Amino acid sequence: MRRWSFYLLPFVTACMGTGNPSVLSNGMVGLPGDPHGVPQFEPPAGDPRFALLLNDERSGGGVTLVTEDSRLSATALAHAGDMVANRYLSHTDLQGGSVGDRASRFDYNWNFIAENIAQGFVTNESVMDAWMHSPGHAANIVDPRAEDFGIGRVGTTWVLVLGREFAERAPPAGEDPPSTVPSGIAD
Image (cartoon, rainbow, N blue to C red):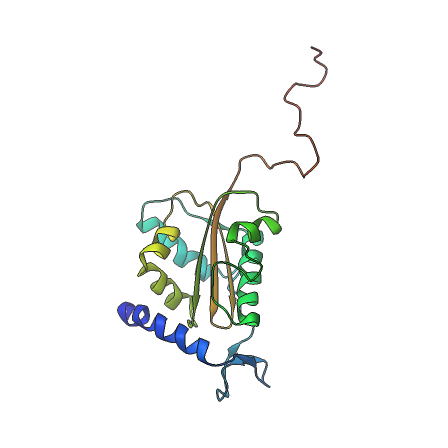
């Protein structure tokens, strides 16, 4: 089964590109001629089953487990939604932004960031299986620098963002960093 889903990925992705996905009368997203479709928004954010799958792969690689971060899930869901709405599949959004740009817009102060995208999968297990059979995607999943993750899904378009924040948050633009001199001590 693992090999089957991996080899099906390019075919499914190519097929998704040949029709124009649309919202069906039943509120689902589907290709023309598909009376059923898939749920328009079915984000696995907050779904402990995805976190278990992800951390199972990480523990098998001997790295620390990651926890879901709502800002990274919002980043992932927004990118998945944009790709579906605008009918593309890319790590670069239509404004030329990268995953780092998108995560920063959701106030994630990252010093490590990685992204996996996929299209054509309907279950947590099938998308994880495909990613683990792709060397670049698998490397992101087991990267020891990751501490947080976010997951977003719109229809059959998936985005996984893995990251780690700086230990101290940077001050907002235009503000000075906090003083390192304890209060009450003069020079």
